[in-house]
Image (cartoon, rainbow, N blue to C red; front, side, top):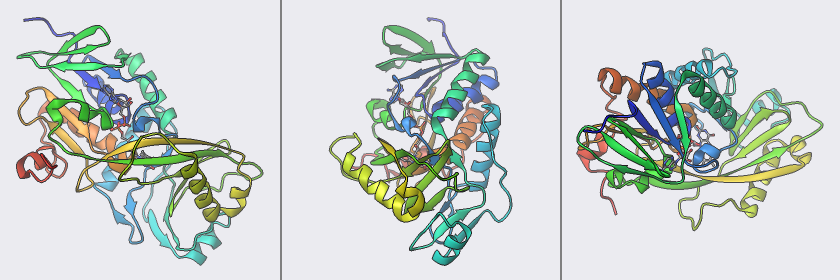
Length: 341
Ligand SMILES: Cc1cc2nc3c(=O)[nH]c(=O)nc-3n(C[C@H](O)[C@H](O)[C@H](O)COP(=O)(O)OP(=O)(O)OC[C@H]3O[C@@H](n4cnc5c(N)ncnc54)[C@H](O)[C@@H]3O)c2cc1C
């Protein structure tokens, strides 16, 4: 039997993969992370909001408080700046109220106000996580292909000519999970989305990020990321200039004064992997020992992935049960999700 090279191989390089890697590394596991070359997946998102509530009723999403706490723990581990999160953290503002509190923000319908805007600069967070993993001794590779071969005691990943063996493989490749036949019976929805990152001048940061008809995530340094679209049918995953113009127009409705001063815009598009119940899909494979997945973060990955990653690391390390609400087997058992055509 060939010896294993690592305690765990993690496929992916987004927030899910890097957080699982960090959690396992902290528990003493020797981990290797294999990512595709820069720019692929939803990991390329320039910024987003960790929004714990849906719509006008500010209905909380899955384990929203626990997700925020987990995101805080992650930001501390990765040494990135965090905000304080207190009681009474969401409120729906009617149009007049929103304009009065935030004169630079204008909305016809009202807006969901979150006490301290959880604006996530994703490239910054991922860079800090990679740095942290490097300093803790994890190995990080970039590879255009990563083929997986099942074994009895050890599985093998062939990544651009390297062969790596481990008893555990954690699949966290975002929408890339569809490339692996071992998981192909999970029929996720693939929803395309676009954001536009723009620079503005003459105004200081408005002091909040906005989620109204879309969102405006202010990232400091006079930059705003405006998002996002939801395209359920699409031909290719590239961003379009036309959609970029629509997003800028949307931003000008939300923040007319700042909108007038926009000087430069870059478009970015990515694919969200979503589940029918809008909760993550996490846990051990139903047949293959040592295979795990963390996927299906949909439009809330910045919020949900840190908690999902803690849960799967605890499951791997101490066999702690994955909550039924997010366990991958909820789809396997009910067949509600699998083998759908
Ligand atoms: C337009 C848009 C706007 C969004 N806005 C928000 C927002 O405001 N708030 C929010 O919470 N979420 C938002 N999201 C969703 C969020 O980006 C995702 O939920 C999150 O990025 C998922 O993280 P992940 O690590 O699971 O997957 P990804 O971020 O997709 O990362 C997957 C990684 O795996 C790599 N990979 C792919 N295939 C392979 C392979 N075969 N082998 C190895 N590596 C591979 C990719 O290169 C990538 O690095 C948005 C998404 C889009 C598209």
